[in-house]
Image 1 (cartoon, rainbow, N blue to C red):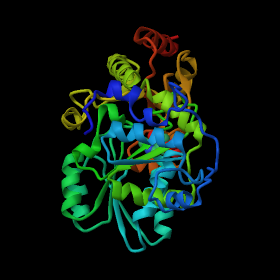
Image 2 (cartoon, rainbow, N blue to C red):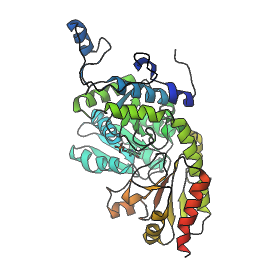
Image 3 (cartoon, rainbow, N blue to C red):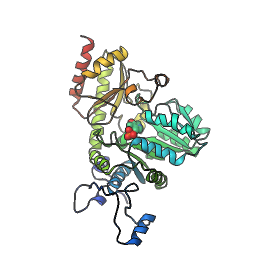
Image 4 (tube, protein in one colour):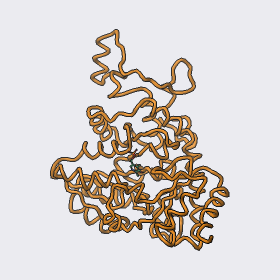
Length: 394
Ligand SMILES: *Cc1c(COP(=O)(O)O)cnc(C)c1O
């Protein structure tokens, strides 16, 4: 029986013991592509999946398996499988279950790459995609009730941090025989466990918070043994396999996941609060604010409000171009969830794939800035922003 252990302990210990060899205290990077079998009968049984073992690196690898066990444990899933990137994970999950003529229901505010799969690639395969207004639960339920194969959610969303009620949509999806897939990249398993709320599959861009250091790409899909087994089969054949070194970087990064996420959540909340009182700032979106339209849902389904918010400055893009370059303790980069504070306008980061018409339709101001809080000291981040904003008075 699995013991119920706190996430802070699991981030450090989960999934690793079985893979440590020669008494090593850390999981090794196994770069070997192939595995030797003197016993040909055993080789055959492993190939058939009747015995444990590894055959070939595209299919399975011990370092990847340790990463998969750790994220599986943190999401409370029966099974997990890994990918070279988050997009590979999302793409594989879609292609595993969808057939021509099927329908997908999702929200307008998904990650830019996901949005491209919905608007560009799935329609080519004669798969119908309906994207609903993010946060409009009635609209979403009405579309799901018309019949669909997959409901895909992302919550909180990029970049305006809108929240969708996972438990409510899970019930509707179930009643209509649809699979509910939730991209949990923004919340991380520390703050939100979609499987506990009724989701069928959870997806991560491990590149972001899980790795946490902006130095390795990766993705994961978690869920039941049956569903994840099907996604794994798609991946082992189509080949978007994670690199063993990348898996090691994920394992190393995830040991501090709990520490980092709580610190980033604290920093984001306090910086968002500071900016919302600043005269140069026209709006701040953060689900932790009581006046955020989805605050009550966030409070119910998340343990914390997360490390990301977005804000706009009076004067639009002109002002943003003046202020952002002056920040000393922030990377201006297309990333989030790293230990360094990372800022960037939505149109250069999450929605670089979207046209300006599409951005307008999404209600994303060109000058909206996404702020992914790092683990720096709050006082330093605040002083940095204060002095950068000072240029508007000079
Ligand atoms: C970054 C991101 C992805 C894509 O992940 P990659 O690892 O860059 O392929 C998917 N979903 C969300 C919410 C993301 O932030």
